[in-house]
Length: 264
Image (cartoon, rainbow, N blue to C red):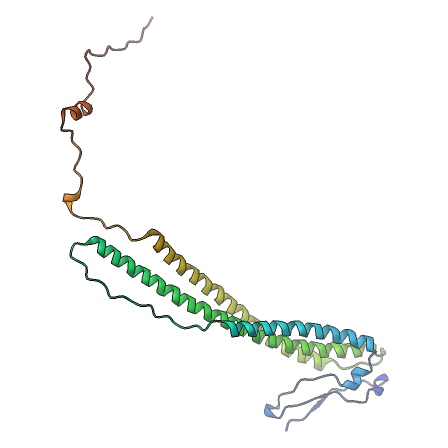
């Protein structure tokens, strides 16, 4: 079994605080358990000071627990992501030369592909929502651990401040414990940031897929172009006497007089 650790503190007024500060040691892996300020040490502090420290901690914990319940509820309410298999109708037989039927067939194929893209993007977005909320749950749990460690350090600092200048209450162990919990909280926070970025990306891809489908529906099928020269309009050529009279060069009963500029 791993040995326990005792944090020493100076003599003086602290002789009244007989309970030693112990760090409990876990048997498995010799990992140190959470360290708390001994109750006898804490009770030596004036009630008003104790109430101020404990009230601030209780309020912070209540806020974090509310956020934790909201995150758990969001995960429970999230729709289950499942891939959708679109129904594909068999392609109709198109008569040779029926360009409109070919255009409609191509249009329906594009719409089906766009709907499939929407379904895939929606599934990815739902998965990103759930992953983001799960990462937030872990992050809030690590914040609760950090808040607890910070509370114990605040208690130790409060005890230390009430002592005479010649007495010192050992707080190094509590600062080290807080640093360990801050490290895990920072790691959880980074994972939340990455999950948020993935969620924003998934939302953008889903929006783009829906816009693609909406554009197809608004524009409709593209009209086919014929390659048959017989359907092309010939160049217009006047054939009647009236048409010829309106398309040849201007004629006058008398030739227009030439304009001359008078000179001196």
